Amino acid sequence: MKNVTCWLRNILIFFFTSTILAVVILKYIPVYVTPLMLIRSVEAMIAGETPSINHHWVPLEKISHNLPQAVMASEDNLFLRHKGFDLEQIQKAQIEAQEGKRQRGASTISQQTARNVFLWQKRSWLRKGLEAYFTFLIEGIWGKERIMEVYLNSIEMGKGIYGADAVARINFKTSPDKLTKDQCAYIAVSLPNPLVRDSAHPTARMKKMHRTILKRMNQIDTFPKDCCAK
Image (cartoon, rainbow, N blue to C red; front, top):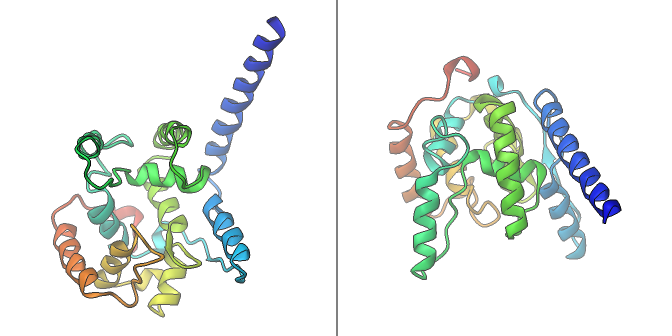
């Protein structure tokens, strides 16, 4: 029994030490690859396709200030106010699930970032628990500006497309700092399902959602101007 206790203690010490260290390190260095990029590559190989990862890290100041505004309007309008979790949206999602309605996501940008960088996408109670843990860590260690920077550089924005630089160059033939308000709103529209929704070729439904996001962009908190490109 004593050996089992020591074994469990050592595992816990290793887990907390390694994860906290990883979060601290990634506060200062770019995230060049994520678990999702690797998973998509494996899926492509299994399907007999050539894996493709279009990704290039750019600092936040080289990304159009319209993009943080658009993703907050679409994904998490209380990003600058909450501590990583939108309790109101979580409660609404739980109520809808109990009523048998279609399950919807209630993840904040912070939660999505924690999942993209440290975990896998398939839902499970284990992943949810780890996601909450890593969200707590990055909120405390990284802060909002770093979370947004990592999010905009790591999020999947199309087939084989990851981050603001790749989507700007592939879908809009421009650089990330030159993305317009309209383009950023279309990118935001695509985020819930980027493998189906193409920000470069929006459907009628996407155009309707695009108009809604443009309105919301003017109604929510402005992302800190000192960390965004003009």
